[in-house]
Length: 223
Image: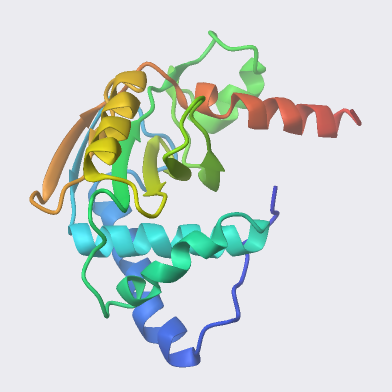
């Protein structure tokens, strides 16, 4: 866990202050306009209006930054640097596939987390979906065709499937279908659309953070 915001200093001042800053501004507008940028998101649906190219550039950018701080997967992003900078067309669906999932709110009182902790976060609401940011990587058992990166903003989880080079389009499409069956409610983002409506899936934000919470608890207890 990083107690602050990591800083990447290997880009030029012009890129950092103009191109990449514009991407971060777009990401902030996206979260704000969609209603996600709140302390507690209690709705169980999400209407996301998006510009596919800008959204994918932003997700790749922040995932690339994260991968360079944790030392994992950074080489996978290098071929997409021109796209991130706005100098190339978006990668195809069988190169990078972005999807979005909406976590259900946790019902206060149905968790082993102390009631006081929930009350402070939910501010008295009966359901809790706090705005926590986590940029990380995951894995789907048995999947070898892609690396999975996760960008989590409150209840919204943006999945990036970064496929291995040379994969056939049909195999990539099959991998996407397997993930949609594994995560009911997940929606693929498409360059042909500008809006997607997502309904909360079976997992709550706490389900998604189960291993992180357990690890943090052990560290706080000196385990």
